[in-house]
Image 1: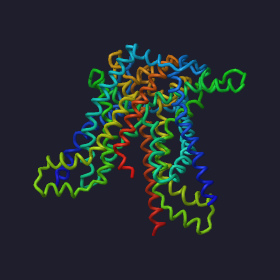
Image 2: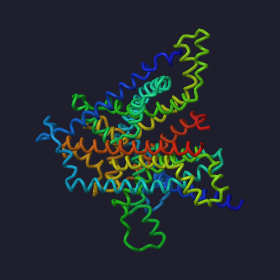
Image 3: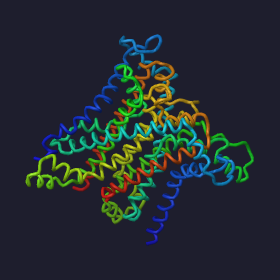
Length: 287
Length: 262
């Protein structure tokens, strides 16, 4: 019977209205656009068509899709492989030091994305730091062209999203019941076996949460392929950008955007299921 | 005992490598911004001349001003809306999956999709694009982050003190300002600071909702166009300033909200 409890809906209303008006409505609008035809000089002609979605299977676009998915999958895998040991090390550090370590692991994530990507241009370009270091080290060949390559894009994406994966895996590890690990060791399992059979399965929800996040943001990324890929190869994000700002084919761009949203929803649903199942396993184990 | 120390050393080595990976690229930028020559080819001495060059660049100053206006308005609006939303959600009797999804969506939706959706939306309604449309768009994700920080605080909130205040005859309004608000204050300020940094740094959505012309260019848009032209020492200096502002806001935010971590 307090101020808050009597009118919770009223308090939430302005924010909900804002999200409905400026997020849900625009997304529904482009969902609609995705089923219409493009006008001769751009714009949207309100004739129903499925052509925008059919075009995705055109070999030209299908290749960009598969490429984006492959790059995003590589980035996700690398990010998890680097983040897991880091999160594990933080969770094993003295309790008093953990918040600070975690804070500095996540800090770069909240700072400017463009600048963090730009930093890699400075490192990787032909006159860049890495080539200079090699030259000082006695390397006399042609400077290496590392920038504007798939490797550069993957490095940039891993770099940018790593902090979040560390955070997600850490939060799983910190909730881990240490007595289960001790039980496994007491029952004679070695450290590796204990890790593979106990620790890893119990922290999979964190891995899944971090992984889904990195995959979704990588596959729809626009800035990193544009800057570190030099525009030489495209990902879905760049394709969406082009349809809206250069090709002036909004319906096709809208269809591509909707496919990104669909991928996101499917992955988040799978992740939520995996998390629920893992929670069920823990409850069973505790019984 | 041996095993324990070895594991500790392994953990330390892992952290040194990972933190090196995270911070070396940033350290290189900061270092170069003070390099007289400005380029990584040679170190010709400490200099702040690239910072001086920024001050003489009207484009950068204009963009910085626009960014500040966008960030301040977006922060104020999203802090109010996000805080009310958090209180509203946490005091509802039943949890609603639809509402949870609505509030979670701005944090995970690919920004390019939200950007083109907003561009389509504003042009369908014939809204003139400018700083106001960037502000409207930034509030979307800013309020979601403010809400999640304030909610975390509310989860540990002892509602009996609110009831006590009401029982003692305080009005709902008085109770809010004298009890709830002071308790939530650190989380609200932490949320506001996070919203502010997110807004200062956001590029893609601002790019799509700013309209044509120089008048509503923000700092990230300015940085993007400078990067596309190539590496210049000014970018290093600008990057150092922008990152310092973000880092300061985040440190402050973390410090205010530190009870939350324990």
